[in-house]
Length: 293
Image (cartoon, rainbow, N blue to C red; front, side, top):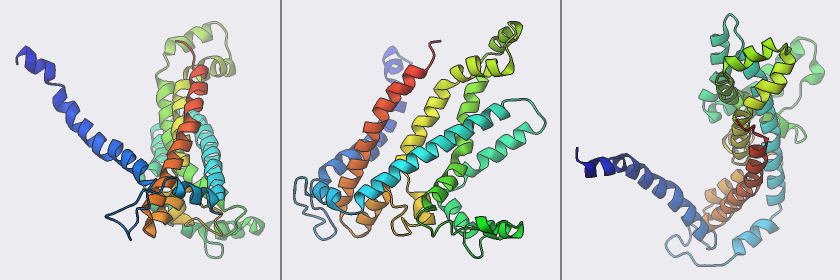
C-alpha cells in the first residue's frame, strides 16, 4: 500500500458514515427548520407557502402546548431522579462480590432490551383497575385501599407512566455506572483501607467522586430521553386521560397524523431548542462536579 493510499484509507470508513449522518440527521434537521415556517400539509404537499412564524403563534396560543410542556418537564425530572438514583444504588450493590451476582446483573438489565411499546401494552394490562394483576394482588393481600385506577386517574397517571419508564431503563443506567465503578483501580481502595478509612468514608470520598463522570453521563441521557418521551406514553395512555400525560412529542405526532407537517415541524423545532437550552447549562454544571484526575 502506497503512502497516498495509507493517507486516504481511513476515508473509506468515514465517508459512508458521514454521508448517512448528513442525509438522515443534518438534512432532516435543516428540512424541519425550513418547513416549520411554511404551511406544508397533505393539502398543499407539493407547493408549501412561507408563512413566517404563524405556526409558532398558533402553537403558543393553543390550550394544549403549555400543559404538554409542563408534563414533559415533569416527566424528565421525575424519571431522571428515579433512574439515576436507583441505578447508582443497584450499581453499588452489584459491584460487590456475592453468589449469583451475574444473574442479578442480567435480570436488572433485561427490561431495557424489550421494546417500549411491548412494555407499555403489557403494563396497560397489569394496571387495569378491575382485572389488572397489580390491583388483584393488592386486594388479595388485604390492601384494597391501594388498588387505584392507575391509568384512569389524572392525578396519578403521570407518576404511573414515569414509574414504568423508570423500571424499563434503570438497568441501562446501572450498567453505565457499574462500568465506571469497575474502572476504579483497586489500589485506591487498598490505600484507603491501610489509612483506616471506613466503608462509608471510602464510598463517600473515593467511589462517588471517581464515578461522577458515569453518573453525569446517565443524567444527560435521562434528561434528553425524558424530553423526547413518546412511545411509552403512546402505548399506555395515548396522552390521556383528559390530556394528563400529553407531552410535546405526542403533540407533534397528532399534528403529523392529521397532515399538518409544517405545524409538526414547528413543534419539533421548539422541542429541539428546549433540549439545547436545558442541556447546555446542565453539562457545564455537571462537568464542574467531575474531579480532576
